[in-house]
Amino acid sequence: MDSVEISLLTCEPHDEVYSLYGHTAIRYHDLRPGGIDAAFNYGVFNFHAPYFILRFVFGITDYELGAYPFRLFKEEYRRFGSKVTEQVLNLTDDEKLQLALALDKNLEPGNTVYRYNYFYNNCTTKARDIIEQCINGKVLYAENESDTKTFRASIHELTKDHPWARFGNDLLLGIKADLHTSQREQEFLPGNLLNDFNQARILAGSARPLVKEQRIAVPAGVQITQPGFPLSPLTCGLILLGVSLIIFVIEFQNRKAFLLWDVLLMLLSGSLGVVLFLMLFSQHPTVSLNLQILFFNPIHWFFLWKVLKKRKTRYWISNIFLFVAFAIGGLFQCYAEGLWCLALSLLLQSYIHLRTQTR
Image (cartoon, rainbow, N blue to C red; front, top):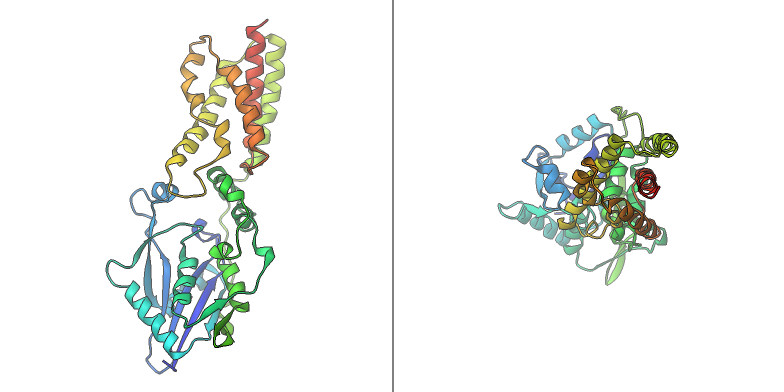
């Protein structure tokens, strides 16, 4: 094993949605002529598998470990224009052998597949865990208090140029994503693990650095960015609120609510509510308690038929109480951009209905 190098590979993001947070893999490189040079990748999945997106949202996505020539791994990220940083691990021959055997064991049929969880069990944490397990000693990480931000704040930094991906995350993530995390929990992001590995030491009798050498395996290239929807969620929300205010003034003057506007707002709010209601059954631990459901819930769809038939209903007064609860919840949870605008629009419409009913 003295001719073998084992490295941690950290890949920077590219434009594909699944890569916005980067990626991690392990390289096994036998330096002898004709020796194996392979990338071990815990991020292999079939995006075209039946119901992949649905299964991913509900936390029942299975990823697997794949191994293939490192030259193919490099070529893939060179095409994407993503920089790949290689950290050669400072392992003994025995530790390298244990890690090679552990990776080989993971490649056996029945062992390759694992239940993926973005925050707690992903391609980065799997690589970290198997490396730590094969070290004859303890890995000591330098304390970094700046890496204890919330899960939501961490992914916000990486989705600032992708507002709709950020909106989707914020819609689905609940209050648990707004709790402060530990430094180890923050290692779900490849960049954080890279930084922690650089400062880590192995304590086994004497102490030695975990990383022996750092180099660039693939230099950063030119990335081609596909244009997304031109308006951000917040812009769309403000436009909706602006239209709501105009309609509110007209309705207020005429003492009459517009049925089509009622239906549109109820359909939008109810659709979001159904999504949030379904997330209650997801296996993702950070989506189970989502305070946005205090206002955006299936109630809006439940009363839609009565509103269409212009029947008397307590729906409009209930929206007042739902909004108050929603506003209180906003003190504890970060809501998705634009949701306040939709909630205010429906609140204005509720006021018009209550006013016309009591005139």
